[in-house]
Length: 293
Image (tube, rainbow, N blue to C red; front, side, top):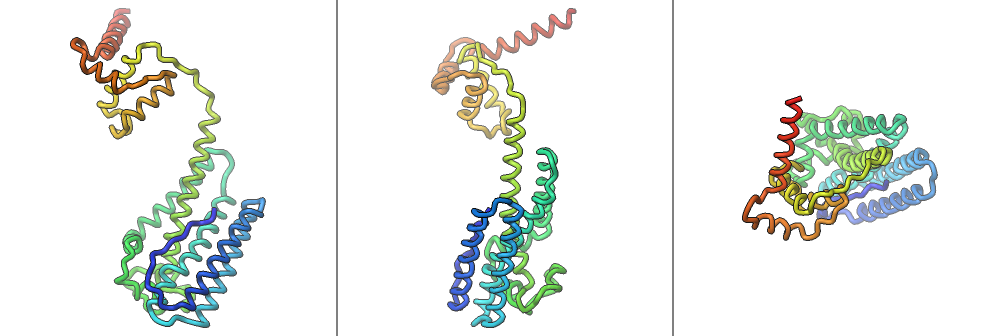
């Protein structure tokens, strides 16, 4: 559950801050890993991790307020990349905590609950699309307004949260960066949970009676290629090899070198679509017999 972090390299202007931050982050991540190994209850583990992050974030705040920054570049680096990385962990674990304690009973209800949480992430993305583009592309032309304390621009549609925050340790957009970073990890968590639920539901389904293909291999290959060229699987984006492998597993047959067999079908002098024509004739014949009843 430990989040993966990243931030682009930029010119380092404040070695003292860099040293303190790097050491603090390493200690935090080490202690998070230890908690995840030792704690038995997942809810209790998340609670402990949240308390730990709050403590380390407080230490970072004390250091920043006491030591400050040597220049604006160092301040931008801190509020654009470093502080958001720690805050994103807090947002992430707090979100997972809420998801877990509110989780309903039953696989289908849980799936609905998780999909609702995914929609929340989508809404945040949609309402912050411009800033997403700015951050993802690592633009910097607005960094002094976004990531320097006291330089906010109210015309940039700031969140109400900013006006209530501690401006000695916040800029107008550092929390939004943290939210973006956290949402990436929350999405991975939700999708992983949904995958395991889907797998669980599939395993609970009664097993289907196996069907064995008793017509010729050439007949199946003729059918497979006709379906492939008609584009009936994945809007025509499926590879013929994958389709063949699926049919082999589904109908318990080894098609061998189906490419070679297809070439033989193409080289037939008479009736290259013998099996498909037989299918069509058999279906029409049956329909006619049913119409006569």
